[in-house]
Image 1 (cartoon, one colour):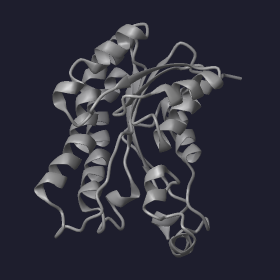
Image 2 (image 1 turned 90 degrees about the vertical axis):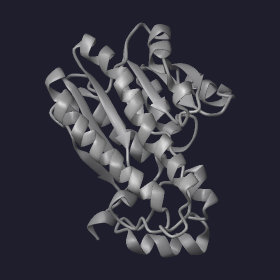
Image 3 (image 1 turned 30 degrees about the vertical axis):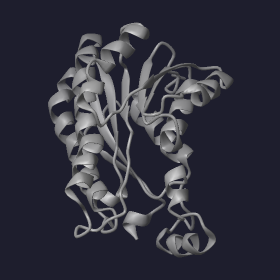
Length: 254
């Protein structure tokens, strides 16, 4: 039987790969023999690199302020040079969020969200595409959100940009499919991460209220997004292009 989830010799880039969903994705690929490039804003990547080593993986860490256009210049070239001149999978996961309504959203918040959540994925994808075309194919995965189409009132700029990410994946896929480059997006529901925990989503009272909306009767875990990323990065999804994969315990269908 074909080993669909063996990424030996593949270079996988994960932005925002140090914590939360990105950490789970980084480790999932490291466990499956990928060469994992973790990109994040923190100067210290020692923790995630140690975790990657502990699962027997090979990883490198790149500190980058992804909201800064100058900082992003040449990033994919640097990673490819360090990792065998290949870029097989790019996972645009890095994110941030303001708690705000449309009335509370400032121009500064809007522009910050735009730089991190829209500009960075577009820029890095454009940097990665020449490598994928030269190799004869590749995978680009965007991390969107259920906030893109449901209950985004309290994180307005985030929800709008995540809707843009979903559209970006579809529009890119329409052009890149002929080059054997698959572009898809994942829309997670509420997942247990440092961010959602800091917002109180997993405190007893708020958790009980939130799970009333989730047919699964619980919120999600980072590994459940990582497994979706593995599927979209593997040859199992070779005919899946321009798709938004919702991973939300049934929330969006409720």
